[in-house]
Image (cartoon, rainbow, N blue to C red; front, side, top):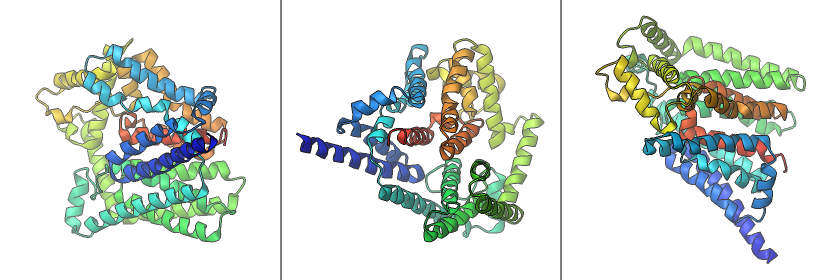
Length: 408
């Protein structure tokens, strides 16, 4: 009987490991792989002999309780929704919040798996970088300027450029932590430094604001937290990246074109130009204003998670009659989105549950997890990523592995 249980446990570990490979590949290349990977990982709990024991331990953990409470608010919002299609789109992955941390708790993480996952991530970024550079060299100077003058960037493979830039910033940060750890093999540190500099250059070449801001936030934040332990190493490395960043800002035409577009975009918004909604940042700001208008109209209970599309469309029709429906954007700030869907009081509770991982990781002195979670919460100020498969994958990975060392 014990042998049979061992076989099932081994099967569970294989499901988690290969599910993680699918998630990493999916984050960089495919939504389908993300879904398959997350579901496979959750499915593994059916085969592990310790699933119930780990679930009982998780029920005493504040981070797990916060995440399932957040998921529960989403799921129970069915009672305040009339558009069940939109409701399902926004909640279908939230059911997995109950199971994913249990699956990761079951998983015995071998060092070889961590190494292999890092290699897969690096290979994916190299592929995306090569894909973009191929198209970059096919453009002449004027064509490249026109691309950035319309709010676009050089081609990326299937994944939205903002999401890709976030992945770059996280991978740069992880590699940066390897570079600053003296106890690691020198060859590993040199390799990590090479890829870190390469991806740092690429993220500037893309000139996506979110990725650049988070990259500097991650590197600076980590240096502050570990400065006492490795002051010379981290201070020297960070100084090198800052100097390199300044040079890239001054020399890369993509960055300069992006800054020029941003200034023009914000000028259109501030002057209340009727065509401002055609520009990316103006659309973002207008969508946030729409969300605030919904909050004013539905202060106590919100418009309902499933009815957020309908409520937003009504305001767009009122402010911009005749506007093409493709510009009916949902509130781009995650926190405004919560307030619009759930009302002021429940929305505030949902916001606190959403940001709780940052407080938890800081309290537990897990500074790498804290810095990443804090950066993602900052990113949520201008991007409602919790409603995307991409964002939920990152959030689940953060919670699952952030809890891991509690018992391991």
